[in-house]
Image (tube, rainbow, N blue to C red; front, side):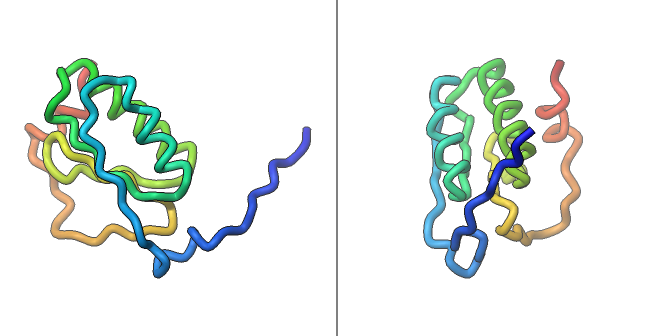
Length: 109
């Protein structure tokens, strides 16, 4: 097994944060835009209000896997708006309590 070398980059310094990508996906095919931006260390605001429930759930699942794989985080802003943050970005906000109605969006089977 060969270890993967990680290149040191300035993106690990949150004080250098200069860009946030906002995406209004219309289909699951827009996952590529989200993935490429996040992989490049750019926080992504993902608004799935224009998507059907099934595709929105798939995209949220994709995003959850993406942030897990790249050691980031995903935060719900509203019931259908999510913030994907790289590991070096700290998200501060009000109380983290989520209403029961909002919580069910993640728990759909």
